[in-house]
Length: 168
Image (cartoon, rainbow, N blue to C red; front, side, top):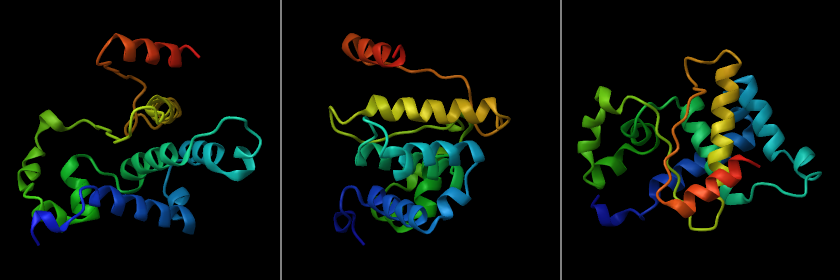
C-alpha cells in the first residue's frame, strides 16, 4: 500500500476504535490499576457524570482514555510500539521505518501527545493525565508511574493559562 492510501489520522482512528471496544466490553477497566479504574469510573461513568455540572467532553474523554490505554493496557514504551501493536502496515506504508530506530535510551521515557484543536480543553486533558500518573505513583505504582513532571509552555499566554488551571 502506498502512503496515500491511508487517511492522515488512521492510527488515531484505529486506536480510538480499539479503546472504545475495550471500554464497551469492560476489558479496559479490567486491565488497569485500581487507582486508574476508580479515576476512569469517576470521570466517565454516567452514575457520577450526571451529578456534576462540568464534565469532560467527548474529545477530551477519548484523549484521556487513549493515553491510559496505550500506557496501561498495551504497555507501549515508545512510538514504534504503538504502530507495532495497532497497525504495523501503517508504519511501512507511511515510510516511517526509521521510527523503529528510536529504541534508543535517549527516547526511553514516556511521552504523551494528543492532537486537539485550539479551545478544545487540552489543559483539562493534561491535568487528568498528571492526576492519573501522580495518584498511581503515590499509591505504590512508582515503577510504572511518576509523581514528577516537567510542563513546558510555548509562551506567556499559555503559561498563564496553565498556571491559572493548576491553581484552581
